[in-house]
Length: 138
Image 1 (cartoon, one colour):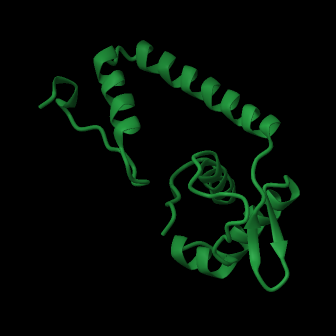
Image 2 (cartoon, one colour; image 1 turned 180 degrees about the horizontal axis):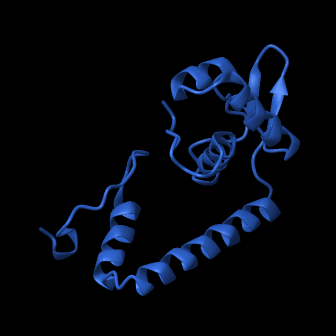
């Protein structure tokens, strides 16, 4: 499976799928010309309705991120620089908001740095989980 969705998130699943595909493109794991899993395959892998994946793919296609290839399925077109910059700015704003909340909740700076370091050192797509005592190298 490429990624997982958070069924408890307030973000609709189709929107999570869109963002995950865009993130895979931005990270270079998906490149222009790469073929995406079929709608049915991805829906089965994620355990979601086929219409949910179809909506995500349809919106990605309208944004010019992917395109339907007759007999091939959906292929990656890529993200144009303007879209790439827009996404980066949105993520930076989200990160700033999260960091402000961390500060308000008095989460230690070393804990936050440890989380950031752990995520950036991670070599696989799996989710990074903070473990108590990690900022001390335990």
